[in-house]
Length: 364
Image (cartoon, rainbow, N blue to C red; front, side):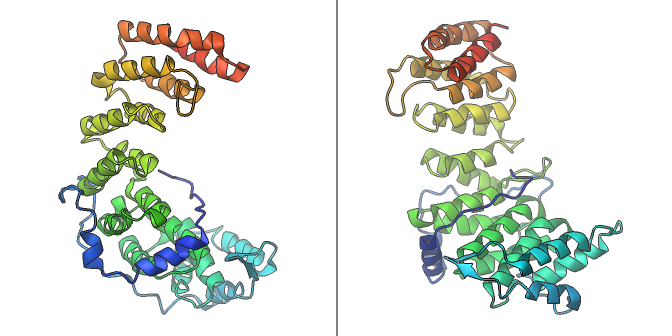
């Protein structure tokens, strides 16, 4: 998941949809997806307590000078829900923010002071101020005093926020706070499950699932988050996000491989993501390589058409998987036989190189 914060593009329709969903009865929403697996509260050994923590209260002792700088962005003009480019006050804030803790001490004293001031402003009536305040949190999560409480705060405000750009910043901060490591993953999952049945907010569910995939390599996804990812993958929903959760497991690699094989065997987009994700698990999925070979041979033999064939991206994914080891000589031979004709029939040099590179890897 996302060492670098990712910009989310939400539509105005989502703002209306989420505003409405915040008014729904939560007990009904919780039961709306009857196919969800039963809850399993087991956590990875490095995961914090799953007990819900009350949302953090906004600081009342924030540094006045930092707060004054944040407030200067309030008059920046906005158009179609977004802050317009070229606002001098915003540029000045970015410069101030970046230079504020350039020469910090080992305890991150200045960065913590900056972050506290930013957090104190996330409830401001000005959308400009809320947006920059959440952005500030997103880029300084290491200085947040109580990540789990801040995660709870963001989740408590997310559905009520009506401005797309502000919600974008909230989701980015939530993701970077790494709930699987710092706590609050159960609350993230509860909201994702609540919204999952609704197609109009699928993008938001996707971003919540991003936050369920651990950033920390020593953190296991929660058992419930893993089960939800398997469920979504089986339904063909939020496929890429589900895969991102599954590949972070160390304790359930066999279950992850089975779920990913199910995606590959659909032979429909994005089936290749299943192969790519298998590669992210090393050679853990090698017991399933016979079936992977069957699918690739079938796809390589398909006539051209919509969602047909074995494309250059699929070749790249398979080459990465082959590089992890575990393929037998017989499996490799079958793949070479299937892919070599594609080298000859490729319509451009770039595509031809992708196929040839795979063939070369298979012949090693």
